[in-house]
Image (cartoon, rainbow, N blue to C red; front, top):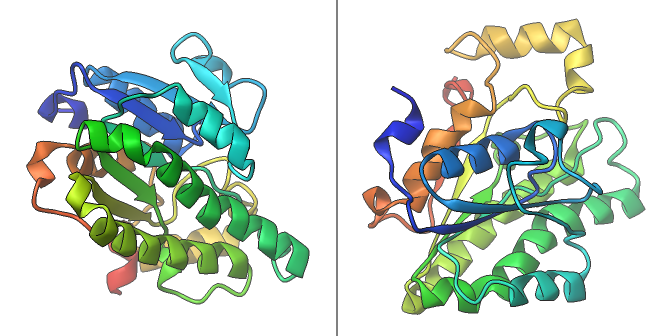
Amino acid sequence: MTATAHFDFSGSEVLVIGASRAGIGAAIARAFQDAGASVTITGAEDAPAEADRDRFPYRRLDVRDTPAVEALAAGFPELDVLVNCAAITRRGEEMAPDFFSTVVDINLTGSFRTAAALRPALAARRGRIVNLASMYARFGSPQNPAYGASKAAVEQLTRSLAIAWAPDGIRVNAIAPGFIVTEQSARSRQSPDHVASVTARTPAARWGEPEDIVGTALFLASDASAFLTGTCIAVDGGYSVV
């Protein structure tokens, strides 16, 4: 059975930030829609990937632009689920201070901007936030220091917002994916040695696919996780336990 077969989000309003490319955000958006939700997606590009152009309402959004984020939020008086997937990384280029700041602004502050702007809409339905962290939140990364630092901060932000917004009935959790085959990981996958070393270390003996993340996202957004908030679940094929 597929992950969506276990969940029913009929009547739910879902917003996935950062779902314009072939990757985790798009896979999560499709899964929520398949489970009955009304789903809107955003991305930095002018249009989403061709496969999704006729599937979702789409808003171009730079999560660094506070007025743009607030304008987006104004269109959602009520919201059941917010998924924060917008992120960038550039392997081997993140030691440059200006680019480091850009990564943090998108990956961390961007997640906070969208969450803060949509807090009233989420509170109206006692909604759920699912943030995307990374296993790099827990390991050093000499090639991706900005990405790792930003994702560690996303995990910490998740804990803090879970406490701060609990009186609103908003639950805030995160997912820490492992090595996933996406456009974002394409540069690192150009190294056969890197691909082989990841596969060898991972107990599941493979890289993950975007669809491997969707079950956890649906779970965290559902009543099945009603007593979970402030947590971050690793979905990495066992890489982090070795």
